Amino acid sequence: MTTTLIILVIAAVFVGALMRATFGFGEAVISMPLLALLPIELHTAISLIGLAGLTVAVFTVSTSWQYVDRAILIRLAIMTLIGIPAGLLLVKFASGLFISIGLGLFLIVYGCYSIAKPMLTEKNQRQLLNEPFWAIPFGFAAGMLGSAYNFNGVPVVVYGTMRRWEPARFRGMLQAHFLISGLLVVIGQAIGGLWTKDLFLLFGLSLPAIVIATLLGFFIHRRIPSHKFESYVFGLIILLGTVLVVSSV
Image (cartoon, rainbow, N blue to C red; front, side):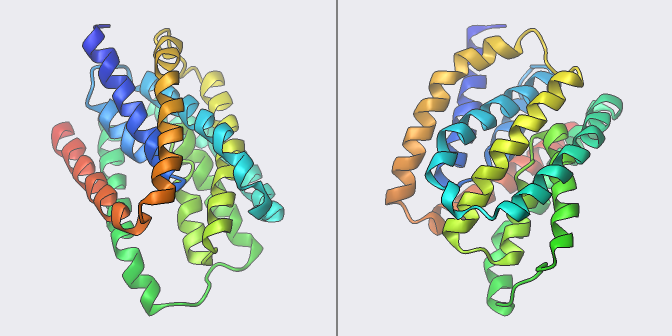
């Protein structure tokens, strides 16, 4: 593994951690496509982002725990645990080409949804998915996407948006879910054989960058209006997804 490759991996992890610390979610949808374009093993990339996301969650959850709805969090956590094996099977038995194309398409759809979300919200101000049942499919999707692509937060982001959680509760629920689901996903990835010999070397080298990105993200979050920065970020997500699909085909 060359020095240039290590620097590029650390840079991809840094950008993702900065995204998470600034907005509360999104590190995997930034870091995973960047790592997928580098010549490192897919399992190494998946496990690295899993460990990085768990580390950021540990740093940030203490500031927002008071806003957590524990009943919803428990349902999400249980179903996340159940969904993890499905994602591990997907990674173990699906082809790398299928995973890359699926990842790219998911990024495009997620980016388009995020950009269109404010317009949809203006047309429909009522809460959706208020029944406790709805935590079950979203929790399962979080576990499956988390163990497969480290996208354990995306289903909860969609769920919280449709429930119209206020900002403090939204951020608190995300960080608490990331801490629990991230721990479950990392354990599942280890048991599922996704840990490789290069994982801990890259994680150890990336750890200072994760800490710096977390502190910098807190600084940016307090000083830059997030809604202006979000539009550029989600546009970048769509672009990266398109590049990943085109390069895979």
